[in-house]
Structure formats: structure tokens, C-alpha cells
Image (cartoon, rainbow, N blue to C red; front, side):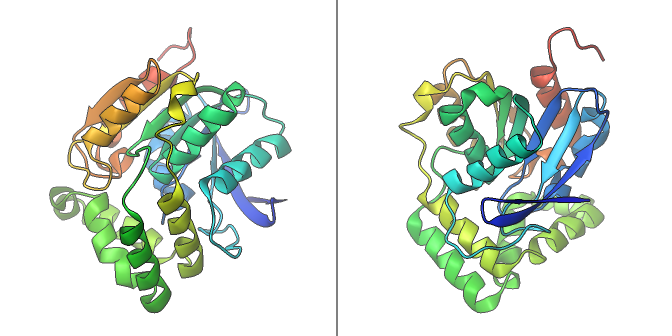
Length: 264
């Protein structure tokens, strides 16, 4: 368990995997913690040293006063890399984590070998939707939105077939600090990368979920068209494709990310 003071916040981070392996950073969705990537650890630590962290306002990281911006949250990642003396990393981010990846790819491409942008979009939702969610959380806490969020995160079929996994995801969501969640909602609300992605020069894979109502496949296809040379992959899942389609996600993302010459 490790913490760093950076950019006005205390950030929690965790290492997994062999020290000699190339570093892969996993970046979370809004409302989740580093634990959302547990389904990836066994497969990915065979090839990478995994660096996970709790985003500002989430998990064990501090909830500084908001609103936040994607640029600020991406700055947290850059300061984390600098503090750990990591010049170049592989990157995989889902939803909000994908937006952080877009910013890094557009402004700090030299820091990234390759990136995977999962279940995300250059622009997610409308200001009215985000403002309503911020108000709901500020007045009613996380339980006011958790039910609707979990319906978008995982399909009904998955929730029925996997009650334990669903309960773990719901617990992670409901455990989020309302102030941190609301401040981060503002970051996603205000982010728009549609005019910024043509300049990305990082090898990129876009992963979308066929049944994702939050960032549907059309968003993923548009993203892959905006980023030159991006590979598009679609999985049978809702928003948390890394959990719902774990095996397929691991296989597809690893096939893209693994350094050339790596085996297994």
C-alpha cells in the first residue's frame, strides 16, 4: 500500500507483477477504484508490471475540492509517473480513464508506448445529464445514483448470472465519496476531445461494448476513426467490458499491448 503527495492531493497507488517487466498503467472509470482491474491481474502480470491507482476523489486517494478537469486528472498520472521515475509506459483506461488517456495521447504522446481506450468517447453525455447526476449525489449520496449506474455498467443477464461480482462492483460504487464523485462528474461533463484526437500519434486500440448504453459502439467507432491507425474491437458487454467480458478483454487487449517479441 503506497501513497504519494502530488498536485495538491494524496494519491493511492499499487504495484503488481514482476519488477523487471514493462509497466502498464490501468486507469479507472468514474465511481470505481483500482480494484475494478482485479480481473486483469492474473493474465496481465505474466507480461507487465501493473501500476494501478485510485483517481482523485476516489477510493483511498483524497477528495480535494472540485470541480475537477480531465487535464487535472491526467496531470495526476503524469506526476505519478514522474515521482516513480517512469519515462515510458503502456496505458489502459476505461470510460473516464479513457478520456485521461486521450489527453495524454494528445499532449504527452512521448510518455506512452501504446494505449487501450475502453468503453469511452471523445464526448460523453450532455451537460444536463451530468448536472442532474451531480445534484442527485450532492443531495442523496451515492445510493441516489448507484442503481441506475450499475444498470449501465453491467447487463441484466450478467447481473443475474454473477450476483457476487455484481455485489462487489455495487459496493465499490456506493463506497465512493459523494464530493469526489460529483467533482469528477464535472470533469467528464466538460471534456470534449473531438477536435484534439487527429494529432494523437500513439498506437491505440479502442474497445467498445455491444450492449453499452453509456458509450455505445458508435462512440467507439467514431473514436477509432478520429485517432489515426487505431484498432477497433467490440466485445459482448455493457460499460465495464473488462469485468463482464473478462476473458475476451484480456485476450484482445494483451494481443495489442504485448511488446513485440513477447511470447505467451
